[in-house]
Each structure stands twice: as structure tokens, then as C-alpha cells.
Image 1: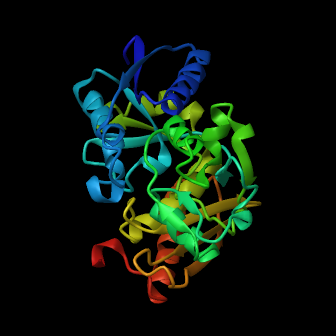
Image 2: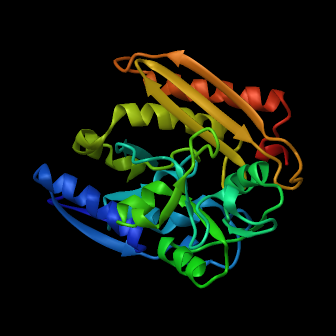
Length: 312
């Protein structure tokens, strides 16, 4: 193991908060840690939806180069930005305890989505949020909103939107909780797979780091997230997939609720599916069990007419 661990991270304020959070946790274990800030293609291309320019992988490719050449040993990601299947040579080593996974309504003038006037403009570039918003308010005009958290808030403040939908976790982490006018419940706005969770990626040839990071891993979060990512993986999940998936683990029962919508036909009803299973966290295959339950939910969606991205 290197005497100093280097964390590769994006340079947005939220990404740096997450990287510094991991740094502090590792330092508390006695490790020396430095940060390597990087700008990714996902940060540079802001004028087009991610679904049209390469997907979530645009946020991690440069960081993976740093892992591959050894200039960094770990990369810290918002887990919802991590593709369902990592490229060969990389490994998701650790998932931290999840922050609030819910979506937040942010607006200067309107307390909630329901208080918007007919035809109001709402900002999001998430196809998931688009189909969920359209199911709640078909009259709204959904317009693209890209950029880091501060950029999105500035576009709202400049008057481009009546309101925007953001992840509650990011707002809380950056001390911006007071910008939240309303937090959607988990049944109204089902989160994206992995939303609110931080993942740590390593090179597959540095599996010795798994033990180093074990103390940061939250198994309950990992089980829920693996179930959510199981749904998304089976659906060919990416940012081009209008898919929501959220799992909870309570008293040994893992429950998943997922929804799919047709973003090309706004009048089409959402398709919902859910499943649950009792699990044992002591089971060495518990993450595989969780993923399999997610796959089961995806098959239920498909049986009702949801279209996997591979079939689009």
C-alpha cells in the first residue's frame, strides 16, 4: 500500500465535499490522504443532455485513467453517476452510508409543485425526473438543466425556471438545506438508483485496498443500492433510461419499488413494480441476492410494457 492515498475526484463543490469527507474518514483511521482534482467530460459538456453525449460514464472516465496509471489509488463518486457495469479493470470497493435519497423542490416563488401555474417551466435534465414530473403535472413545460449544483441554482435565480428538482443529499451536504421548499416523498418522486450514496472505485489490480476501505463500507446501504442497481442493470440502465428505483432494508426485509415512463409520449402512464425478500446480512452472497431481487423487479416492469434501453 502506498504511504499516501491519493483520491481522484471531480472539482465541483459537491464532488470535493464528498472527496474531503472520505479523506477525513481515512485520516481518522491513520492514513495519509491527498486529493487530485480533475475535470471530466461530463463537467465540460453542459449544452446537451447526458443521454445524448455518452451517459453517466462521462463523469468518471478521467478519474479511471488516474486509477489505471497509478497516479491515484481511489476515486470517489456520487453513486448515481456510476454506470451499472464498470469497465474491465475497475472495482466498486465501498459504499458509504447513504444521505437522504429523496428529491427536493427548489423555487424562489412556489412552495411546491402543486402551487405552480399552468404551463410553468421546470428544470431538469434527468429523464427519470421528467417522466415522474409529467405524471404529476402533465401541463408543465420541462426544460433541460445541466451543470453542477451551484450552476443549476444560479440558472434558477436568474429566472430561467419557475422551479427545479435536485437531490436533497447534495443540498444538505453543501449546507444549502434552506434552499429547499419541499421534499418529495419516496412514493411521489422515486429516486434514481444509488441516489444519496457515495461510492469508492479502485483499480482491479489494487484489491488490497478493499481491506483498507472496509471500515467505510455500510452494508445496509450497499444491499439497498445493489438491489436498485440490479433493476437498472436489467433495464439497460443509464441516463438515457427514464427509470426510478429505490430500495429499503427494514428488520431484515429488503423492499424495492421501481417505475418506468415513456418520455417520448408524455401522456403515457407510469409502469410500477415492486418486490421484497427477507435477507440475512451475514450471508456472504447478500449483495448477489439483492441484485437478483432488483432483476426480478425489472422483469416485472418489462412484463407490463417497460422497454429496456437495449430494445429502444
